Length: 199
Length: 199
Image 1 (tube, rainbow over the protein chains, first blue to last red):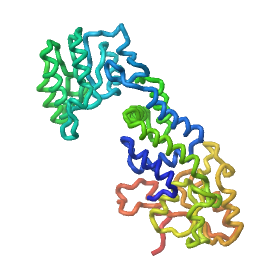
Image 2 (image 1 turned 45 degrees about the horizontal axis):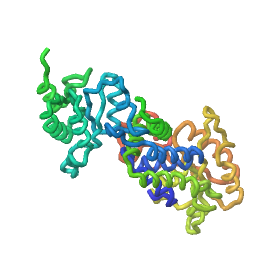
Image 3 (image 1 turned 180 degrees about the horizontal axis):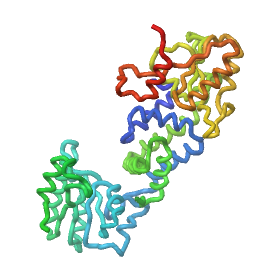
Image 4 (image 1 turned 60 degrees about the vertical axis):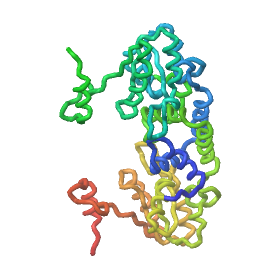
């Protein structure tokens, strides 16, 4: 479906680069933009630019921050001896939303993935080692996805950090709360049996 | 899930205003923007602005155009005596993609919907009447959705334009090509029987 304007074409192309937006959604969104108020479109464009120009990586954990250090790393009330390692800044929000973790975070900005050419040096791992070396860390909780890349990264970090006397743990993977054995996939069931805990 | 930055909050809010993008998708997209290259984000913001500043309504059909008159209205090779009436500029592309229509278009920019407070005067109907009055129009094909609003608008236009001696037709609604009676909804089947044609 050829758009009648190269400007509409350009916008459709840019929008279809975004995750989860296919060519049809992109075209629909581009037409929607066309029907929007000029001031609304300008506000959307401005917020896009502002996100890039006002948000930085926290100098401690690598999470997002409007200053040098993010609010969580700067919060003196949070436990200093536990670090939860996550893949993305978004994962920090997801875990914060549970209200069940009171330590600090470390954001890797990716996972080890040899197929994609991503090795340990491409991730925010050096500063995690530095934080552990500075002392005062009792436990590292790895909250990485139960995928091949998550498993590989967890194993790599466990081998890297355990020798320093720090307890390295990984969040449990098994049946979701409220789910049913009958409707769970076999890989999940196998993992839940493997990771069973004593009552 | 509270975002740790008001800039990210603002972008998430703007993105969630777009059609088909819920709060979760908006948050995911905002984080994606954060991970994008600065130049990519600038290009996206610029294409948004450009769409609004370079695209206008065609002075004849009301469709989108980069100049006073759109390429379809300006194309001397297209049939001048048939006008296909559609709701949105996007519908023009959808019909053009079929390659089966060689006349011109008229875009209403909406449908009559008393519940939403949209009456005939809020739509691009006046200029359609003008085009018919100027003469040379043999047939008006109404290609409006088979909804309550589409039905109401079709009926209104048929009553408005038929007295001028113009044939007003509506595109057929019935079973989609390749579909199965068993899996079609009863409203569609009822309409397909009502609109049956002689073989």
